Image (cartoon, rainbow, N blue to C red):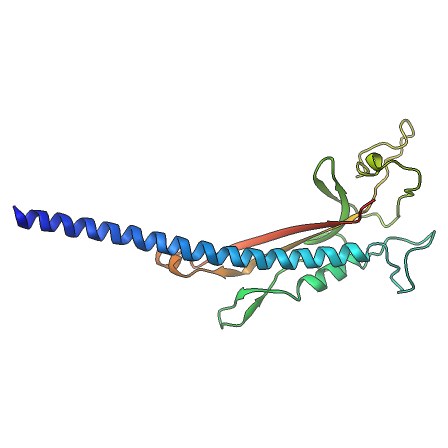
Length: 201
């Protein structure tokens, strides 16, 4: 009878050991992924802030826009360039892995110009390079000018107020490294972080 109890205890110890290893893997990997996520967020924040700051700077470097000039289309390039200077986690060779921001040109991909609405808590990508005349326009109306809001009422005019830049930083091609989770065949994790920086009214 004692032998049977000893066998049961060994089985329970084995089960608890597996559970313990699983919890250890979860704790270590979750903490690691939290750090990676913060690094990605830092990259997205830096890129978005730099891009938003450049939205209404003259591309030729001569200062703020003057009447007749367009929104700085280089804001996307600036956002991308600043974002990819950041690193996150490690590559397979142990070196710091670059942050991925998928953008090549134009207003598509992971670095976009657009409109941020405080009322809707929503970013809408906008391709326009024409600044909106903001003088005398109430903040509440400016906040809704994403190309679907008619202003002034009854005119059939749907202005697009470009006031923000969105950047998405990723770890897809080089996944965030896993440690103990490899026991369960989880070799890495795809991750991303997003930031929107806007120009206040």
